[in-house]
Image (tube, rainbow, N blue to C red; front, side, top):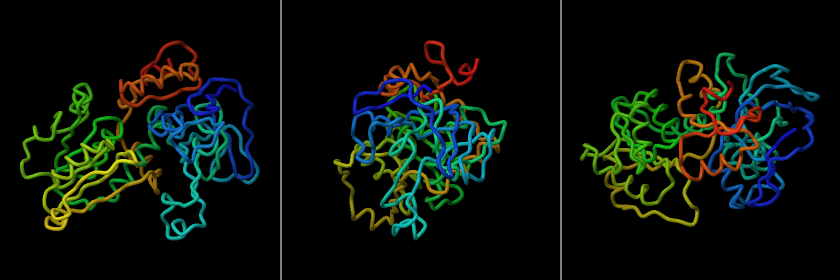
Amino acid sequence: MRAVMVTEPGAAVPTEVPDPRPGPGEVVVRVDACGLCGTDMHILDGELPSARYPLVPGHELAGEVVECGPGATGVAVGTRVAVDPNMPCGACHYCRIGRGNLCDDYTAVGVTRDGGFAELVAVPARCCHPLPEALSPAAAGLVEPLACAVHAVGRLPRRPGEHYLIYGAGTMGLMMSAVVRHAGAASVSMVDPNEERLAFAKGFGADAVATGAGMLDRPQGFEVVIDATGVVAAIEDGLGRVRKGGTFLQFGVADPAQAARLSPFRVYNAEIDIIGSMAVHHGFQPAIDLLAAGLDLDPLVSDVFGLDQFDEAVAAFRAGTGRKIHIDPARRTAGPATAAEARS
């Protein structure tokens, strides 16, 4: 089969590799869509300590089960599935208290074992979530990042009539805006330095957009401020935009070597809650249910590339062009495609 193999940091090569075989409790999935994300860039650059090389990356994947190993239950050959890449150990302190996303011995598809930038991938059957037949390949490939947003919003103290401010109009910020609107936000404002992204965000349902939060007409602040950038300057600015009694959610992944300044007095005096949200935690089925109920995220997929165009896909991701980029291993024609064109 064809796959993108990262033999060492900086060396990602589309190549022929042996077809995977399912072990006990595993299935083989034929990949229909696998999204590129920042974690993949960290793996390519050698910046993710948990990554194990050589590796086929890709953890935002969906496809069809084509083979079942001994003892695999819950899905059958022919089942379309989204794959939860996260495999907590089940034995550490955090797993035992029901917080597997904080596992001390975390493993994951596309990080510590081969992932979805391949025609086929072997995964534990327990990680596979059946999908409605009507769900598009684009939507199926968005289940994993949507599950991250679902988990994050689940950590917020949601109250009717609250106004939200989101820093970052990239894929995750836009997903977050869709989820909080569904959860009952009175309004959603978005900040991003990229005018093209802001224009899309406005068409995607944002009530107000701006290149800087000071340009928004809410001098009293926002009940909920969400950072979806990981940029320290945005985080520091956002902390100052939280209204008294409000909440700041750190959703973006920041450089672990950097620190943000805040006013401890204001946190105390204004009773501001600061919440973090890391990866996925029991969010897959709610994410699938949202999509099945009509949450339309297909427009977020702006480009679909084949495996042999992986370098082009990475270059587009690093350049910040478009929105969500998917890899479709079945795609053979040259050049990128929109989600609607990908299967034509």
